[in-house]
Length: 632
Ligand code: M6R
Picture 1 (tube, rainbow, N blue to C red):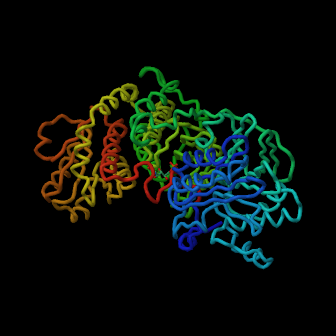
Picture 2 (tube, rainbow, N blue to C red; picture 1 turned 90 degrees about the vertical axis):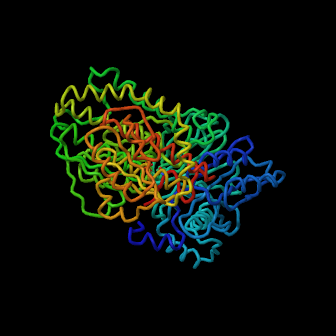
């Protein structure tokens, strides 16, 4: 394992590949087209260079390009005559955390004779030792990557055993770390060898053609049938057959699953960006989440996904939630609502902090992992650590087919549909819904909250989709506000109580897609330091939803006004006096205070979107970010 204290040095050396996407295809279609289309749909995973290797005219041919995938597509368009006979190929998009992405470091990587090519997602942690051994045996390395060791190692084994699957199986026994690999060899026509350990890879099952990919979007246009490889399994893909072997070389029975995605989910449906489409999908995401769980405010919420029996639920003494980024913000709202309704203490911690200290969890602790992708390495590690200590693991995820979901004792899928934009929007709202459902479920079992209050919350949840639709139907003022403040270099979001998380999430959305420095503060903290920064250039956006802290935050906003800050309010109040205090008032429909984070985040997502769009930023694929982060 790369230890946390070594990560920085590894990053400096350019060795850490946080994401990357892989596609493999064997069949009669235009191979280059299938691979680049597949890579396009995986661009959200990372996109600083790309490449493909194809077997055409009996030769392994490799093409790579730096920068956007379009550069690779342009290159391949000039090579049509060289590659038209190809019927097998592998492709890769790479996203390195540090160091200049280059053609040399882009995948596929080959062995010295050039016959074998490999694409890889993950990190080979013992690559230095392997590289030294391979160099001692005469291998000449062309790149600085860990992946190239795999190419040389497998080629060497192949020369010994003359069986590509066996060569891969033996070579991977020597690898430490995480990998999803697809390998082709010019002496083994019409074949891809695919294998994985701690990195996602699925096999798409077609008719007279087969696929391998890091994620569903790369294959969904062609097939809805897939096999999820287990760790250390090795698959042989040919156009008309798939065979899978375990680490001990026993052939295993294939479990073909039906993918829940529709190709339409991957289209922008007329919106300029996926992010805007995904923001507009939120009312349906809420309806979808509630269907089958809550029909009327007078019925108990149905959350059969929670597998702890009533007695254990009643005896829970603590809940710990681990998550990263936007999912962490959803967890903060979850903490508030669970503590408010269920009288159970809840700790929320960034997974990356949680995993490197002594944490106290036991069989009486419920540990909740929250993750859109279900693949975030830090959260996955945190969950595994807690599971080993005997805690019940509840996973809230948008990907019930993910590695994290497989660790769950209780799995709560949020069913937001595929989220393409790197900036999480609808998955956040869906995660919030999962926390509301869980809090209501626990409160009903423990009888820890006032029945009328529970009924009011349920009623409000049922009404929420229409109210958000109303908000989404009139966004001119948000767009105007976005234009007005798009030249700001810094932004402050303040809130209190349950909406503190909304301030953090609003600031994160703005940072990640517009690159404006934005910070969320609990409004009461302003005068303990941040207020020193306020002047007439700094916008302060106050999130003022009606409820017990409304007046408090109004006073905090007045403190900002007194320092000449540029004043923006986000509120469900209709108090006309607000127009005197604020330069801009963004109104949202009124909701119950405990539900307000779901309503309040929508205009902040839109504000971030329109600022980034106005500034001409790459909204769906912001620089330096990847949709899911699969190594620590
Ligand atoms: O897939 P996860 O929810 O585990 O991902 C966690 C974060 O990487 C993610 O929320 C990230 O912060 C997003 N870019 C936020 O928009």
